[in-house]
Length: 107
Image (cartoon, rainbow, N blue to C red; front, side, top):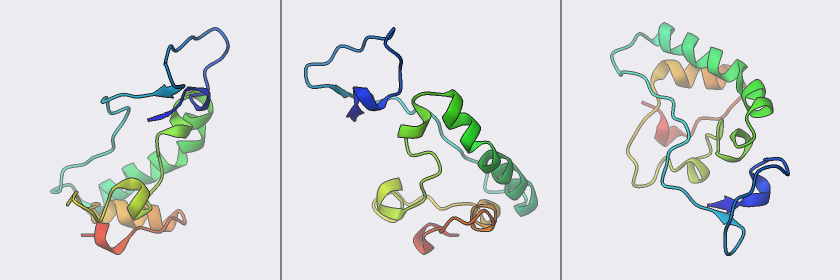
């Protein structure tokens, strides 16, 4: 849920809501790889994704508001009921880019 005013749409887009909140059950984007993929391949894919985050956020109004690139355990949902882990290659790429990956999200 987010404030409609935070979506980043221009004046020509109208979103009707009784409380200025936008709600959806849709996943706006996800990044995942097969666990059997090589560390090098996943690291390269993740590094390419990280390099394009600023462009994605600049060109896509909603992208800056959906948690893309947020690895914090509490804000991302890792380390709680969700038991997913990052691939070792993804961990390497995120850390090389200066991000902190929560220990509980590492393989």
